[in-house]
Image 1: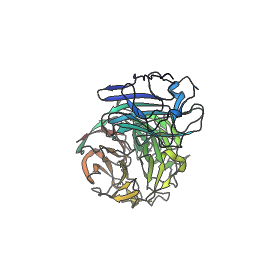
Image 2: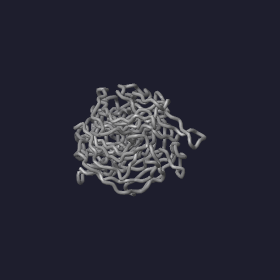
Image 3: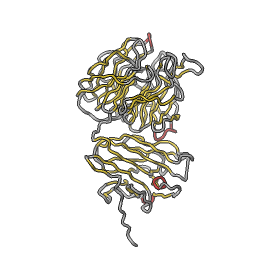
Image 4: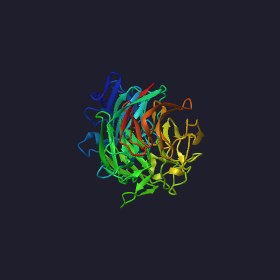
Length: 497
């Protein structure tokens, strides 16, 4: 038998100035995609050209070439057995990872692939779109980037992966998706300059950072805005791009919703519960909903997720190790606070939300962030408006042990800390807030999980509660909020370490 010499293309491989990139096509040894590295199911090992990658076991018998289209990259794939993983040796750092999964000859197949503890693709293929495509920002600390099946045995497939190193840093920073494990230097201060105003003055919106851009959704918009009339949720949402220093209006939400819990999974933004605008009115809203919406940033489209077990609002969500956790909040009676915590396996959404350990002290309007395997809940309030009791207590939830622990108290009582709480360098930052009904704060707090200590590191240029914030392109961005009125001001903050 004549041996075959496989020479793998290196056009997409760069190892310049500590930057790594690669494009890999998965399929039989006979199917080649020009300009890409080839993975034909071999076990992990060094390949021609000096790159080391491959599977945890030999999968050469699991390769497929459908020849269904002219696009070789999407024609070929590998069926991934349950428990199998694919690794590629890379320098430690942060990577943008793009994955394609699916079989062009079959539809209605569920795909769920993870990359470094995050969900890259999850859902069902359709006849009109037989592939799922998704991306994540992944942090590598052990010299290997890992991809693995999260779904049914043998049903998950992988066609292609694109990997680009974006930073030598292992700081995930700034995303409400949580899970940051970096423990960088203490943040000692922050200074602000003025940035471009949002198109709508709004308060109590939802916000998230994806691919170094800040997305702001809904909130209560002013009468001149594109949405609610005063205290009705606005359907509008927009995006701040630090490269252009501009806000761009992106459209309207399927249902105008404020007070929703929010988190990021890959490049998708998840919303759970909230106050919804009442159809046919301009000044009314309904308190609490079971709605779960997913905003797909790559396509600017929306889809529905698994409904919550009960109607909720003013809650918190965090994403850790493939699961979304939905914490506490207010039920439809509007004046009580619940201790329920639910978890959703993103790779198995059909199983729905499952009850996990209850938070010892229910609350609403609190700050939430994830560091490592832990979720932190800080501040908040009991009941609402003039009947509210403000809190300075904080708790840590260990997602592995399924256990809540009380941590250090905040320096003083405060609420309306969502969505202006996020992680930078493994530290949790929280901006402004409210200490009494309609009495706002300007404090910027840092919580260090390693020392269990809150520190005031600075102040916003003015008192604000319930603004939107995120860590974007190495800067803090704070926008909107309330203080006897709604605001569209945007401030750009520089952190001091």
